[in-house]
Amino acid sequence: MSRFDYPTMPRHDIIAVLAEFQIANISDSDLLHPDPDFICNLYSHILLHVDSLQEDNGQMDFGALEHLENPDHHVHSVQVMNLYNKVRELLAAVDCPKAFTPKDLIKPETDRTELFLGALLNFCIHRETKLELLRPVVEELTNFEERRLAAEARTNQLNAEIAECEESRERELPLVQEVNSKVTELRQTISGLNNHQMSLKTSIKQLKEKTKEMDEKISNAEFSLVQSVQENANLRSKIVQSPDKLQRALEEKKMAQIEAKNAERAAVQSFQDKTATLESYTKASKKISKHFAQMQALQEQVQLILMLYHLVLSISKICVMK
Image (cartoon, rainbow, N blue to C red; front, side):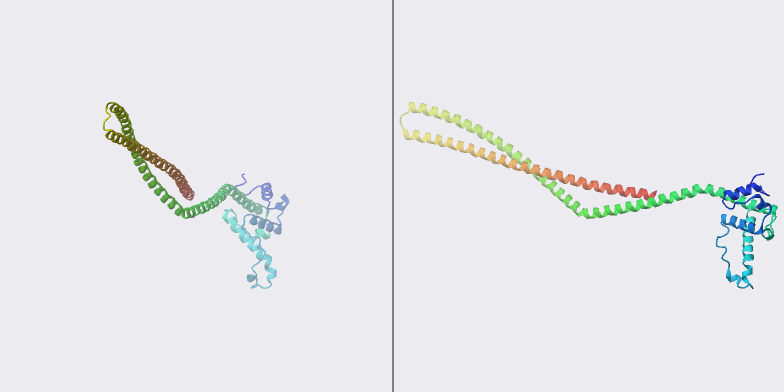
């Protein structure tokens, strides 16, 4: 017959289960000749094992005993009745086929004692089996609680980091606005300088064209001067009269030549001045371009900080959703 079946559990199984659960160590003779005190003590240990009897049951309800004469004489009787009620309720809960009576504590019988002990121990085995099945669930709940606490701690950490990023962002916002303002101002300055550079290039191109024209005019004037000198020499060889008139003509030619050379020098000086101005603007443009590149790098760093902030905020939302 199975150890889970009524009406009885074999005696050796009762002894083995009591020893396995560390309830009591008994022998066959203890069950063959049950002693009332021994049986009461054994029932008490079984109830303690299933948590149906508190360990402080020795503390009697002295308020109730005060209504009795000689309460010290009734302490044991009250303990026995309390134990009887606990055992009877538990046996009724496990559907024991026989009713538990006070006689089973005061004057126990072997067969009935083995039946009741078997019923109680069957309940202990069933209870232990269920607890073993529930233990993984309890452990899983414990692990889940630990993960939940870890997630809350991580969420609090991320919230603190987000708050720190918010504070840093608020502190750096004026700097970012100032940098953006400077970048906008530099862009406008660069645009203006680029326009001015284009204007200078156009002016230089025009000056070069004018210089070329002046060179051509000077060359033509020099050629004309050479021709005039030759003609003058020819005329001197042919004409001797009117030396004053000839001298004035020569002076006029020299004046024209001097004016042509002065115009050439003025054009060259103007070209050199324009070239120096262009070089100054070119150097200024390079410096402004360098500052603009630095401003762009700073702006990229600010954008990276903002991207990190949004990334941390997204991670926090994901953790909260989990």
